[in-house]
Length: 388
Image (cartoon, rainbow, N blue to C red):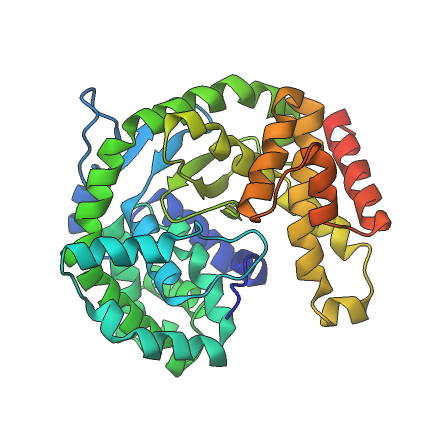
């Protein structure tokens, strides 16, 4: 059951739904249960305390920056659930290698078992029938608090996916948004089961694990932020000219070398990347940010240079994955060349391949691209960096 890494639901929505997604980012659930959500929204994003300990609210550093570094518990919980029920066999895994076994071992030591375990077979079976459920990896990026996400899901389930039962236009829009991920009755049943399982997983295990790990990794988060603020100016021309001048980066515990990124209009990009385990590995997060910045260019280079037959055979998705990795190296070579070898080593390590004596050359062999796509990608990068 291979994860579909790059399903971009935002590209499949109507303009009204895209606008809904944007508003969901900026506020709680569009006025639903307004009084309760106003209280939680005020605590949704906080500065890291000086003592390094964190509460259940989201964390952020450099809040005044255009691209702050943050964490979100409901994002990590959602991706944790997917990591536990999916098998990730891609060359660059979405989830950290060994994540599933690590979490199982932690839960076993605490003698914890939840509905996520009990419902595992049913949750996995639905993916065989509808692998498009992988689209919903992106769902928590669209909600600024766990309560706003909860209320949207519960409204969607209660209305049986019918926007006419939303009560308000905003409620109808929220239902339509979720219906783009879970379009059928069986998909809604899967969501209901997954959501119920996640709630118990959070109560019995994941919340305490997340709080503890955030406290332990406070120095890592600060190190990532310092590196990001150091290197972001070198990337500014590319980011501005590619309409990625503004956004937010979330460090996510389950993620590996593949991130999750959504564009909410011009200069409003939301991206989730790996959360390194130690401050000495903080640069890993920068590598994944660069990789994510190149994804749109990689998609264009591939779509413009493959045939419809190749697209139907699935070569497009394979080439896009390789083009994002190779494109990230091209970008970093032109903007932050001191990090180029480290970038190559990181993605070779993510792919479980040895770097050899020349990691950049090895990267090209492990992530091969047709020359037409490689040339188109390099040309796009030159145009964007040149500001044409």
